[in-house]
Image (cartoon, rainbow, N blue to C red; front, side, top):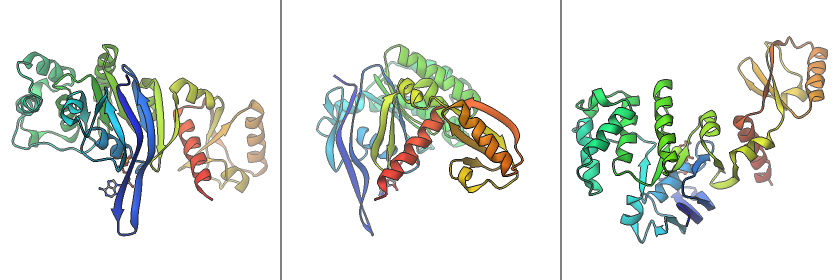
Length: 306
Ligand SMILES: Nc1ncnc2c1ncn2[C@@H]1O[C@H](COP(=O)(O)OP(=O)(O)OP(=O)(O)O)[C@@H](O)[C@H]1O
Ligand SMILES: [Mg+2]
């Protein structure tokens, strides 16, 4: 039995322009013990899918099972199996950190979990904030509390919606260390993130969503194989010739050109020299998940256009 099963899930929202389809027949199964990544650009439908999973929104059609429990007809059982870290920072300003965790435990009917709460506080670098009021915490600290809150009942399935947005490098490492440990101990993890190097390092399998549709679903290693080529990276202040500009990913002065064969690199360099583009700080790197992501998204756009 899969840990999570999304079965032809669609979601439409009424808007002044008519019905907007945020999710379009999403089907995918996440197996017990997987570390699964859900990637997609802003507005792709990731949070909508997680909200339906967590019972915070209703699917317009299709259904979602959590270890066999339907999130609509068997809400309480499904919800107990999930620890959800929401994307939005929502918290009760009147509690201190430890009270917030106790309160959340009570919500799930869990008592005598003081040791686990201490371990959560310690593992998430919150030990010295246990008695601080939620109002006094910085944004990154609040996010740590959200993670701790999601885990108070030791759920078998951990769902993280952008848990590292606005979080400093040190906590990101602490957090991933902790979540990876829980995953090793058997917890299933579903993660959305815009940090693709995190997804590449952590996730065994990845689904990519675009405009509510699954446009890629495979083992991370398979997705990376598809991007077997190299990327030519350089800086320039010159305008690029149109033929190269059409292929390039430009960020300020930095230009990146994907290549499959070594001779592609030579051809690019020759063309740049002929166009008298001043090329600085040349570097060649292996294609990574970000390159795969961009090419999958570009391909999905091309297929969208009639
Ligand atoms: N309550 C709502 N009413 C109308 N449209 C909505 C509502 N909630 C979400 N949407 C729309 O559904 C689409 C998907 O939103 P969603 O929040 O799921 O995206 P996301 O993939 O999580 O994006 P991000 O990476 O920015 O978090 C967006 O176009 C959004 O505007
Ligand atoms: Mg989101």
